[in-house]
Amino acid sequence: MGFLKLFKRNQSGTDSKNLNVDRGILVFENTSEVIRAENVLKAGGWKIRVMGPPPEIRTGCDLVIEFPLIEELNILRTLQEDGVQPLKMVPVSSPLLQPVDLFHNKDFGKYLMIRAANMKLTVHKETLTIVNVSGGGCPDVPYLAQEMVGKTLTEAPSPREIGHTLCGYALQLSYEEMKRRC
Image (cartoon, rainbow, N blue to C red; front, side, top):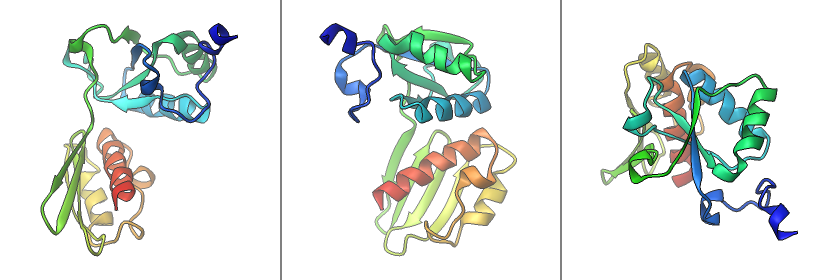
């Protein structure tokens, strides 16, 4: 019975990285496919993380999905059923293949900045007002900043609702992390 549990999804709510299992990385052609795969896998209850790719496997897309390697076949089957096909799957077998954490935080006293990938969101800590959106080179960054700066975290639109690029996705990650911390 214990052996069979190894092949079932981790539905206990514990994070897969704490189970001391080997990890793999799914590489996709573009950011839209990563976002679609993330939605499919999370809706299916899989414990995955969107990360930055290690330089050794970077293909142009700045995101990969990290997953428990033991669940590879079931995860690939789930993606295939939804029409999402990764370019490749790479086992994380060396320190050089470690995915890169997307989050970096900087406390400026009155302000807190959270960077996810290349997008930064800065908030006044007392009022929770967004004072700056910066980074990236995508065409929707000025629009995202215009719609969010000057509003509180609860008033501002979700970047995922109004942005459609890698920068919008990265800003969404910063936004969610900021809401968790504040």
